[in-house]
Length: 154
Ligand code: DAT
Ligand code: MG
Image 1 (cartoon, rainbow, N blue to C red):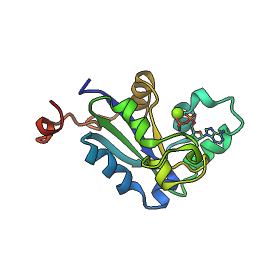
Image 2: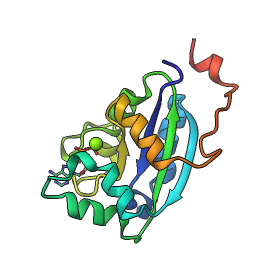
Image 3: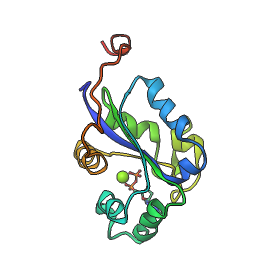
């Protein structure tokens, strides 16, 4: 639906490499609406909960370390619009950038699965879980009307 929301993040390598604006711009230009935005170094607890379904993987420890070591923050975002969960994943490209198509964020901007610069929720369930995990405080998500909407969605 038009009100569908997803959690998208720029990981520390994306922030360190100065790709925040590039990633935001792709979602903005597509016509999606930014309803949540924050910069933070996630706690180990937050990162472990975020990646809980991967806790048995051999790379879990290094993944959590990389997300939380504070060498750069994470930019967490909530984007809203038609099919944004599915399309957000399409725009990110394959998990392994070496398999990501041209035109995708990963396919255009990175090379390694351990430094794939961005995150996007993979289902409605994950989106709901991740949005409430990363955004909780009062007013952190803003429900606003874009004056572009009638020119983007009909
Ligand atoms: P995605 O980020 O595309 O949703 P995922 O949820 O399967 O992918 O994995 C989360 C992150 O963990 C991924 O962005 C990078 C890292 N990762 C996944 N598989 C990996 C692997 N085989 N080796 C190293 N890191 C991996
Ligand atoms: Mg995932």
